[in-house]
Amino acid sequence: MAEVRTGGDVVVESLTALGATTVFGIPGQHALAMYDAVRRSPLRHVGSRVEHNAVFAADGHARATGEVGVVLLSTGPGALLSLGALQEAYAACVPLVVVTSQVPRRGLGGVRTGHLHQLDDQQASARNVTKSTTLVRDAAAIPGALARAWALAQQAPAGPTWVEVPEDVLRGPAGTPRVTTLDADPGLPLAPRPEVTAEAASLLASAERPVLLAGGGVRRSPGGPQALVRLAELLDAPVVSSVGGKGAIGFDHPLSAASWIEDRHTTDLLADADVLLAVGTSLGEVTSNYETLRPQGRVVQVDAEPRVLGSNHNVLGVPADAAAALTALAEALADAPRPPGRRPGAEVAARLRREVEARLAAQDLGTEQRLLADLREAVPDPADTFWDMTIAGYWAWSAWDPRGGGWHTAEASGGLGLALPAAVGAALGTGRRTLAVSGDGGAMYGVSELAAARQHDADVTWLVVDDGGYGILREYMDDAFGAASSTELHRPDFRALAESFGVPAYDATLETVGDLIARTFDPTSGLRGPVVVVLPALLRMFAPTHLTTPEEA
Image (cartoon, rainbow, N blue to C red; front, top):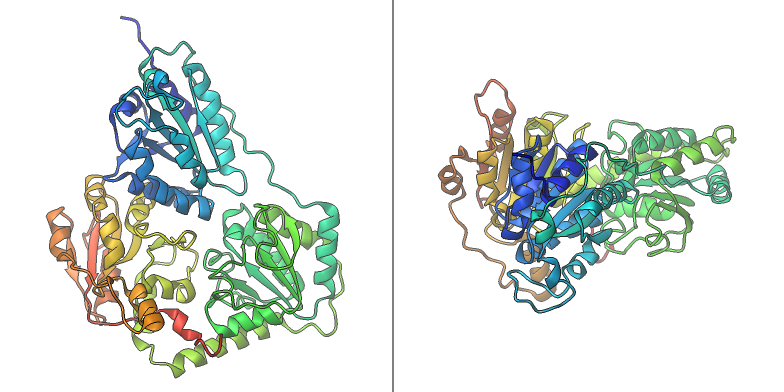
């Protein structure tokens, strides 16, 4: 009997030809032809339990491996449940390709045919959280649509793309030859215009107090960290890392001023620069220390997203990929004489670190510092870490030294639940044990993925810091209104819940949590697959925003 290929086969063949090895998602009625094709393909399918967690898992896979993350979704409720996680990928510029089914073609365009899961305009829901949306109406168009989506997902600024295929196209016969090769070259990175480079280089060459601010765009740009270090050394300028840019320059580099972005001393350093070069950052709410940053000198802002430029400050805007712009500036400044009044960058960076340390020492923050220090000691340097929106995570924004490992948070959009599913996707992609850190509130968003972690034997260590509720919201309400409401939570016994999934779990104290985490990473411990460590509500952590008092702000 001759083989009958379907539109679902064309989707899977196209993804395979584009280089996909792993796909994430949940099957649904309209998407079953895609899943049947996956069954007969070399692709590995990682099944999540909720659609937004499938996107988080693909997001973590993409961040940790550098590959494009792929998600397969079904129509209507499944597609809509993905949107919150897509907002994070869109804001953090993570390359994803989402392929979702649609109702049969005769039900498209708002026609009320009564199909299950039917929406008037499914694409419209995705447009606010993706770089592009495409509706394919014929199997022959699938390869080209996916190739374009694949290339666009990687073009700076990277981000998720969305392709819809109706159920009858997925189930119907494919009249196109088997897909074996597809060209999805994202093209050359966006380079800065020479005249803009010359103006920015002139400002930096004459600056006596230059400061570089490295955002997430530097980390995501191939070659960006190396280009950043080269330019910083040419200028002898200190480098502050934003939360997203942490890891663009090693904290052990003499010019690194670390990433205490929420500390007043760091804000003052940025404000005092006569030329502030901000690369791959919008200078947004967190990076500006909650809009208290008031630059006194010129600001040169580099970003591949033109809407970012000048959105918060008056800047010389350089629309360009981070690595391309940093390389062009270094070339322009290679032979430029250094102004005699330029302050040594290493001294400036060291002084800032001392000022931050003095502030920490003067405040009662021993619990917070000890927890982060013990975790840093416990986790091997190359390990990927994923941090949810939780007070321990907010401390990590400033205090965590990546030491060459992947550093990942949900701070781009600020939603809950990223850590565990993203860590599962990362661990399955890299084959290395990965750390996820959540609060008890965020843990409930992703706890279902313990089933996926167990099913796929993902080497993930999940630390749940259980402080009894939404800790940061409790603080915000206490500060603003004098009392908190709706922030206290009834929680499960996280240890017992994990064990019910067949996942080993341990209760920790502040004194033992570091040793327990370290044991999970020890290859001689015998621990394989997911492990949960629960730090109960025996401590009341304070957010690092307390480092800047309202009077100082």
